[in-house]
Length: 147
Ligand SMILES: [Zn+2]
Image (cartoon, rainbow, N blue to C red):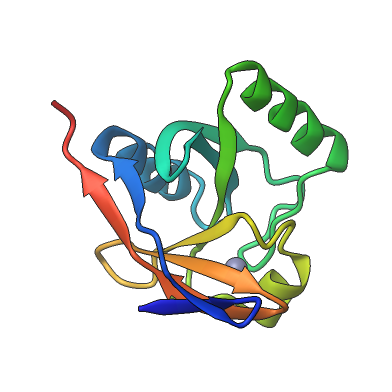
């Protein structure tokens, strides 16, 4: 899969998510059903190391909202830990793991991957996307077994 950035096709880099972080995200979403949840994933390069659960300030099954102050505070903590924000995740309690037009408009930064966890089906489905100029392209992720 290629991703066009500035006209130059580059190979989409895989996001590596440790199994323990993956389970934490799935559980975060599950425990808050029927409402949406969101959070940040940070680490180094494409390796996720930490999960930052955020509180959805509007109780909704279709939207999430986190105040700017909370987001900035979390970014600060991530910096302090010498990590960078890799992805922002949110759940879709009843719909497929595909970005909505609302998701695309409100995406905070094109450098940050969008992760969506869907609970539409019995088994939660997770997808990762790179967003650029309001368009999305799926990006591959790997779950790294916890040793
Ligand atoms: Zn969404």
